[in-house]
Image (tube, rainbow, N blue to C red; front, side, top):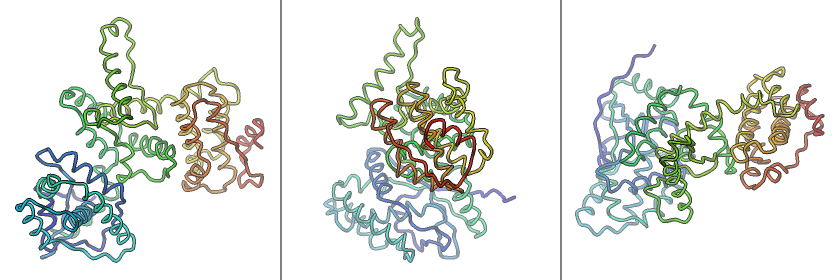
Length: 446
């Protein structure tokens, strides 16, 4: 068992980072993978917090190897900060003489890296142009805040074995890098000052959830539904995809037209539930969440996760036991967890696809025409199981992107319209699963 690494920490500014002597990227580092949206989000976050005393950008873990300082963790943000500074230095005309002196000093001692990986080279070239586009619309307050008040928590490791141990822990199995934990930290920052009591309760509820179950809820359901309903791939939920669960903060939304309905829903829900009438009828109403709707940061995010955790925990089990379903729908809900081979990896991908689509439908239309919805979604999802001998997640993802039932549901106003998609099942099927085929024959799909 590997010994726990004990690290001493201190705070360094972006200015210190950018002028760090002998800062290197070791050979075991992965390529630079940040995309345009990540750089844009970084700039927007800095701009949002520039009136604060400081803004924490993340962690920088360094392995000191003689006179060289190798980046173990923090590479992506370090390179992005470097690109942002180079864009500032190249195109921004600074008038404040003190700030200009700071910028010139940093530029004269600026860290530099060489990149041979094509992925890194391409992303660096693209993200530099992104930074240039945004820098043109910034002001000197942003630049001053960026170099002096944006900070990293700095850790230093002296032994290479500890560096590899830390690198492996952070990038392969470290719980502190779980995407849902990063989202927790982000949304806790977005609480308003008068919500401290709610904040403590929400943290307590969140910590009561098992981490692996939260990870499953996000990765297999919430992330895939939000991605597929946008027409995007649902492959691999990681920390670079958490932007899907960052929304708008009610007290900070600009006077945009789309924001008016969000403010009305947010404040009216609170007003309704705090009315003295609720003390009589006990008719508490949750915020009207929708799986593909804009997310409200802070308290509403935690309420949303609690709401959908209950939905996914209960809904599918309740459907199996629902006495109001017709015979075929009942059989479908039973067979997806009982036919021979239903627990194979590929079969679990298909079943999760079915469950995601069904929950997305119910989230929008409730139980209206639920039998027809179960039958149609079953045919749409399980045609894959018959047409492929071995199913990888890529097969499921491509099926959604080319035959996107999630977009049908999202863009429709009635259940009838949402379920109009034609479904054809290939006659030269790779798998024979009699229970599935029997239902599809009864429904006239084969």
